[in-house]
Amino acid sequence: MYAARMSNLPPYLFARIDEMKAEQQKKGTDIIDLGVGDPDLPTPGHIVSSLCEAAQNPDNHHYPSYAGMPEYRSAVADWYQQRFGVSLDPVKEVIALMGSKDGIAHIAEAFVNPGDFVLAPSPGYPVYRTGTLFAEGRVYEMPLARENNFVPLLEKIPEKVAKAAKLMFINYPNNPTAAVAPDGFYREVVNFASDHDIVVVSDNAYSEIAYDGYRAPSFLETKGAMEVGVEMHSLSKTYNMTGWRIGMAVGNEEILAGLGRVKTNVDSGVFNAVQRAAITALTGPQDCVRNACAIYQERRDVLIAGLRSLGFDVPAPQATFYVWLPVQDCMAFAAKLLSEAGIVATPGVGFGSSGEGYVRFALTRPVSRINEAIERMRGLDV
Ligand SMILES: *Cc1c(COP(=O)(O)O)cnc(C)c1O
Figure 1 (cartoon, rainbow, N blue to C red):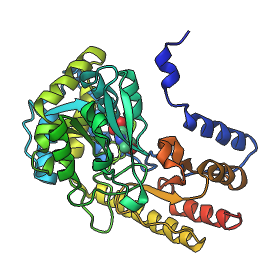
Figure 2 (figure 1 turned 45 degrees about the horizontal axis):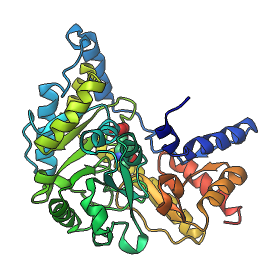
Figure 3 (figure 1 turned 90 degrees about the vertical axis):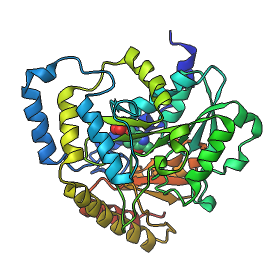
Figure 4 (figure 1 turned 120 degrees about the horizontal axis):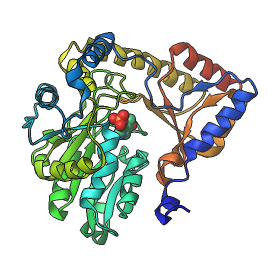
């Protein structure tokens, strides 16, 4: 019944984890879910109020414009200027997305012909792969290894692959490894992309979730980046708005026009009231973001100290709300945590073959639950 491409979709490992979790729940186990990359903190009140008000206004009840409201795109451009020092033309260099997943999932359709390569990090956000498969492209996995600080070695990409590549996804601060982009890496990406005529898509969903004074850059700050790429960004992680479905693609005008043409044909934009609330988020007080980071930072410190006390050698991340823990066999480790301690962690292979040897913990549960998880693990032979 299903099309052939359906069989190429990832065997949804996350569905298997959900099944195992449901089995445990049925047995009455008190589950500590450190698997989901979805903030447990609520959306800040002033943003929710802004939505409520905007939803009352009938002017906001119509089809939105495809590219986003001019006011929203201006707010995004102003935010990029203030935050990164990147100047964007709100009319040509900014479009609204229904979350950054929308842009990531659809961009390959605009640039990839059947058989073309798409360069994607492994481990990586699974949508880089699915977007490529829907466009009938081929994924070339760029391994992210700890000994290389979880950065791909561009010089290791075979010349034949580079020549047949149309798109490259990069993602720092990184999900799932929690790595940040080292100085000079974006420069290398710009050079590689212009040498091989490759469109770069920088996924910057976690730029605002950072610790110890670290400030994540935008790819677009790099000289020449505007000529070769775009950046996908989102309010999901920054303002605890994962359920609202709003983000943005910014950068090269011609590349955005291609993505915009695909989207015009498959969706009808983001609810105007949500865009109004997003303007409030971007232009309003930012102490909510600092507070959220302080909460994640405390959780990070508790989890890292706990894991180290159990004998694990694990670095403290400077950004994202993940901890990427090296283990022997990730499936066996995750299964044991769940069945013997009621703890959900995501096995690294769920993010690609180079994720073997790791599990991902999300810092999306309170300190008390993280402490409880560590105590339960102390009773296990891990
Ligand atoms: C959460 C996430 C996204 C997408 O989030 P949206 O809610 O669609 O904006 C994109 N990339 C990475 C790496 C993520 O973790």
